[in-house]
Length: 264
Image (cartoon, rainbow, N blue to C red; front, top):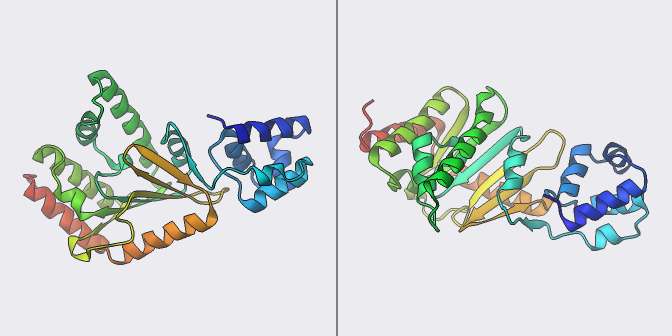
């Protein structure tokens, strides 16, 4: 989707007669990281920007005009949609809804159909198809490793019919018992915890620095700053330490599904 900073970097690289790989080799970065910076999906660290300036003889321009570490994007989920396809590990925290990658079709339709402002049936269909397409990354039996940390509130709040809630919860149980994902529930009794403010996603990659993504009220933000990502990872770890074990979480999921009318 591009950015002024990324576009300018690309212009300078091409003017220097360098490919992305050649620039990556010179700056001790990866080609894919260079590509993400040029596309506006990532922000170079301060040290990366300094090495880019040195390699391209651009003085301190790339360092001085480096975008903010937290990058707000207009189509705020598009960058994350691309990056999740490349991630080797994803850790989610959800407060209001089951994470998109783990949504069953009827639950996804109910959630997306309740959007505000309202969307047409055709638009809802398009969004459901997109969401289910994203979930195909789970068809790989190994990558990405996916952990879901769920606030108990999203299980107890009936955002759709009881049968759909039960079906969705049992979808989580099936994925967990198949060994494809791990689910941990943060019970009500924990009270305040470090992740109450936003939905959070942490992503790790083979050849790029990790990043974090937070979302709320129709806006999302990609966090690329190492210090910010580390802080959010620590918040996740603290909340996870108060969560139920995998075994107890699955037991709670089954009980909740039964409460919604699931016939086990």
